[in-house]
Length: 46
Image (tube, rainbow, N blue to C red; front, side, top):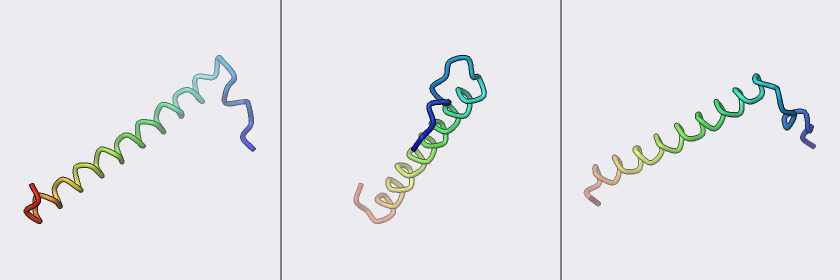
């Protein structure tokens, strides 16, 4: 079970980590989309 400590206001370290984590997730998703698009172009789909 996840602790409620992460929901505590006034914790800038937790806020930074959460934002960074979302950023890494967004980066991975974007790179995945680019890779799929590049593979589709190489295969002649687009």
